[in-house]
Length: 66
Image (cartoon, rainbow, N blue to C red; front, top):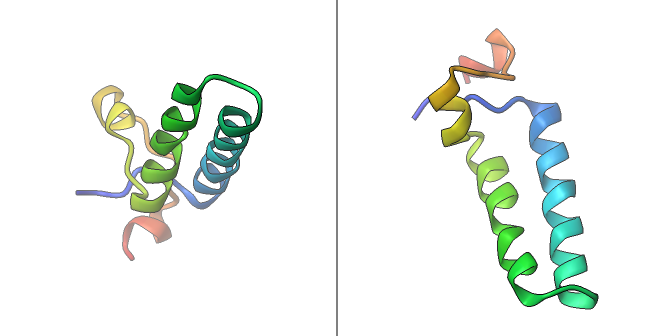
């Protein structure tokens, strides 16, 4: 699978996933904590299926070669 998430996007997704997780555990409904898995997994794999469907990539050319 080809990378389509860049470094900034990956860090943003990790932060977003952490915020969803913290909110879901501390204050919100439990399913929000499960929803936090999506940003974590996509950031860890540097791949987003939705980006692939619409043809978007936030990677630089140098990041794709790695």
